[in-house]
Image (cartoon, helix red, strand yellow):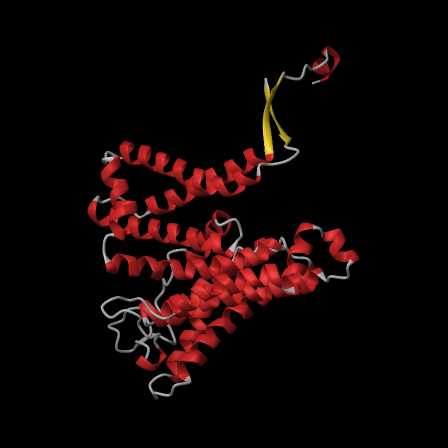
Length: 364
């Protein structure tokens, strides 16, 4: 017997939106088995992972804080995916946004001027866009695949950050720790709730949800993006430039990732350190597909992924489990989502094994 996948004539539309929920349920079952194999009570571990972070106002504030960079990066990735422009390097663009915005904060901060914070935020956006412009140029000029170029540039950005905080930007009064000096108060994002780390960047991130939806569904740019992705032949016939769409998608995606980066360092961190992200840019890829490339779906997916991050930290503290459990849960979520997508679009058939003619067998 052999397994064959046959395309379904009409995939169930409802399952397209129900499959993320199914993937989440299967992930919970899978991680419960993992906890049992590690010698932990699955019910206690699941409570620590999914329930405990939601039982306090501080936990809810941290949930929104961690969801913010995931939301911004994932919406940018989703815009590109609609045109089949695959930006896998949001992590690098996130890092460059933090570097350029943080550099502006170090240079301009301390004067108490009202315009300093907007300039810092714009510098973060510009940094992310500039880093995304490199693969856009390589794609449109030399046909270099953006999956490779965006991914490789992420590691370049991380190494650049390490060089800066260990070298020219290192705080001379920081007891030799690899970090910059603390940003001045006029370069930090205002807090929304005293006693928490929740800042106004969360509200700006929420604003990108309806704006992203309007962009994709109600504007000519969004129509071009969707047409280039869904029907390249029709797009060429209509005179839509794929190269222009590549630039638009990567610059938008990079700008949003850069915005997430400066929000991270001008918000909860307040300085540049060698590690400013636990992998938000990479996790945002899962968030984008879990949210079905829809900004409103991505909002809920980002909250779920942020909850996994928070719960993973709780598992480290209370159950002495490694932080790698967080990545395992994310991996399960992506695996089950992709598996569900295959079954939505294809029907599994068991076919008899092919018989090899005797003559062919002798030659073999």
